[in-house]
Image (cartoon, rainbow, N blue to C red; front, side, top):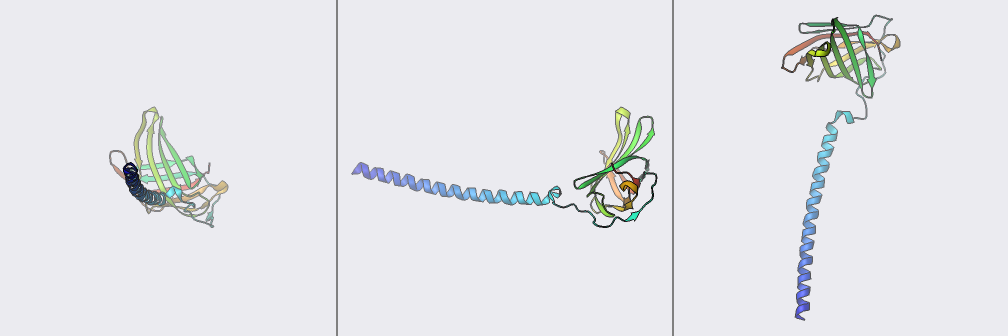
Length: 197
């Protein structure tokens, strides 16, 4: 009897200890899962690229233009750009506009503008990024400026010419910065009859 009683007491203790441990472990696991879930959902809602719809104008093609010579002009601080080479292409929820001006020799000035949405209609498109660079042959960039903050700045499409050639301009000033922290202010950027790729 004594052995049997000891055996029962030992099993009862182990069973009780196991239940307590399992219960505590389950509580901790549940809390961890709740914390992970709320963190993941918070991250997802902050990611603009997870949106299901493009933020772009709808329904109005704007002004209809006659065929014209393509040109992109820009004023940024003491620099001016007057480009006739380049195009735009729309992929998914973004439009990339590129423009290049030869400066002589192997040097060129280039501007790259990325907008939210595809250029199907007239109206304001949010500016995602803007880069202004001067490239000197195989030596690479002589300067490279990029916009750190584009919030509140739009590219306003006024209409289209033949073959969906785009017309528009930057809505207002935009500050661009190089790696050394030097700032330039873009006071105007105008797109005329710019061809689609």
